[in-house]
Amino acid sequence: MNQKILFKRLLIISFVFNFLSTFYSFFFTPEEINKINDSFLLNISEELRYILIVILILVFLINFSSYFFLYNFKKIGKLFFIVPIFISSLVQLFIPTASDGPQLLLNYVVYLTDGGIITLMYFTNISKEFDKK
Image (cartoon, rainbow, N blue to C red):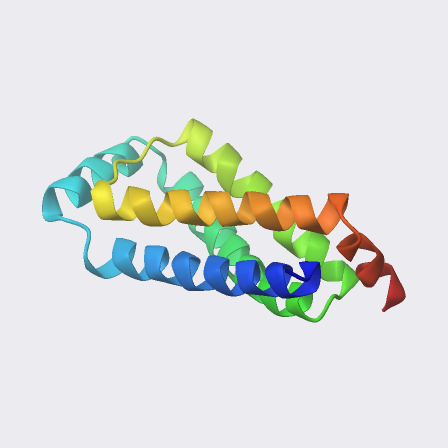
């Protein structure tokens, strides 16, 4: 299969599963898990909570806009894709959250496709496509 086609299909798969994961976490997470996640946030000061919310909204917007830039092979897309992954990984290390099975499965698919995207983006001939534009 052509690497460009594979790259674009991985982007679409990652975008869809990322959207589904976000949608599921807002609307379908069981109440017990919401209570556990809320208890983690209650231990944080209100100011820090607002800062985290703003950071997560920015990460969310940058992450979803990165798919457009990567699909069109814009160089800024590489940065917009890597930075949110790095920031969200740091947040997940320091703020524990609880998840249920479907949400974990959706997140694992996103992690795997993101790894494939990063691999194709930096270690194949696709990296030259970003330099052309």
